[in-house]
Length: 255
Image 1 (cartoon, rainbow, N blue to C red):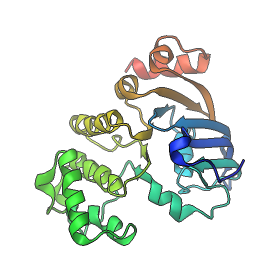
Image 2 (cartoon, rainbow, N blue to C red):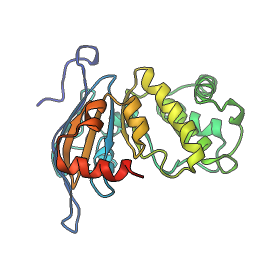
Image 3 (tube, one colour):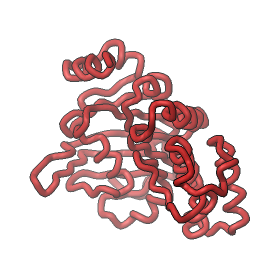
């Protein structure tokens, strides 16, 4: 498989992972021959129990985690040999559980830093873009506040705006609401829903089953480092094929 794929506008595939394996030093196999293809504009939600490999997998997609075997190509950029890390991180936005904002910078500075340093935007252009993004996520009034003065939900919306400021072709979300108080979860999910509706390619690791049902084009169920089942959300939740999927859904949907 070649990294010199057809141009993005001719290639409907955004992510191609082939036989991806990852083993940690203690011989724990976190990923066991994972295969996944994601098309441009698709919203894929990954679910599964803790320790199933879902967060490890999503972190391989921008080389925050290395992988031992297999191949990953994102928007025509091959990650397999690690040579294209800077290129891929310009194209892939990531939002984490913990917001990872710079505490010594205000909201506007957090959002403008990378576009100015990496994309070469002027301060004026970067600030205009940042204000447009803050409007999009509903917190323009927080532009000059510092992260420690914001609620968790507000900080996560800033983190989303910061990722979008790099104009990514793919957005990754690693359990973006799991560190939030329950009443703040919805404000973040609403932003993510809007993003999905706008046509952004998204891969989301989450425990929010309502969001998964409503927004996902496809559900992927991970367990013990493997994809156990995948499918359309309606069919997946109503009539899962695998016993392990039924057991997981029975447990998580009963709470």
